[in-house]
Amino acid sequence: MKTEQIIKKQARGAMRGNMSKLIAAAGLASLVLLLLEYLEYLVLYIGNAVNLDTGEVKDGYTVFYLLTVSGFAAAALFASPLLNGFLRMSADTAIKKECRSVDVFYYFKGGRLYFKTILFNLVLYLIYASASSALNLSGILSWLLPDIFAAEMSLRIESVLTVFVSIVTVILRIIVFLIFAYYPLLAYAIKGDMRISCIFKMLGFSIKHFSQAFRLTLSFAGWFALCFFVVPVIYVAPYFAVSSAMSARWLLELDGSRREV
View (tube, rainbow, N blue to C red):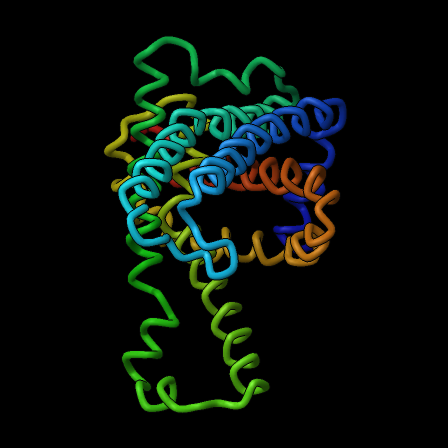
C-alpha cells in the first residue's frame, strides 16, 4: 500500500466522531470569508464603481475602489485566524484522534496570539502572492511570444490557449503554495504557536519534503474534481486537512524540525 493511501486511511479513522465538528469549523471559516467577499462586491455595486460587464473600474472611482478593496482585505485578514483554528482542529484530530469545536476560535485567545497569527498569515500571503505574481504565465508568454499574442487568432485557438494557460497557472500556484505555505501553516497548527521567523527557516524543510506534499495533494485530485459540484467540499476539506496534518506531523518528528519551532 502506498504511503499516501496509508495516511488517508489513518485520517479517515481519526475523523470518526470528529467529522461534524470539522465540517462546522470549515463551514464557519468559509462562510465568514465568503460573506466578506460578497459584501465587497455589494459595496462596489451600490457605489457604481465597477462596470458589471467588463469588471473594469469606472473613471473617477479609483480611490473609492482601492479603499473598498483594501478595507475588506483587512477584514478578511483579521478573520483569517478562523482558518488557523480549523487547521488546529484537524491537527488535533490527526494526532489525538479528537478535537474540540471551540478550538476554531483558538487563535482569538488573548491579544498577543491573535495579532501574532494575523501577522503570520500576512507574511505567508505576501510571500505566496509575490511568488505567484513572478510566475504569471500569461504575462511571461506575452513577453516571450509577443508576435503570437498580438496576432489575430481564431476563436478555437484562443479558447484552447486560454484553457492551457489557466490549467498551467493553477498547477504553478499549487506548487508555490506547497513550497512556501503548506508546511508552515501545518506546523503552526500542530505546535499551536511558533515564531514567525520559522516561516523562512522552514523553506528548506518544505523543499526537502515537497514530493511528499505534492504526491498527497495529487492523490486528492479526484476528490478536488468533485468539488466542482460544491457539496463534496464539505467532506473533502476536512479529509484533506487531517491527512495533511497527519503527514506533516510524522515528517516534522522525523526531521527534528519541531524542536526549532
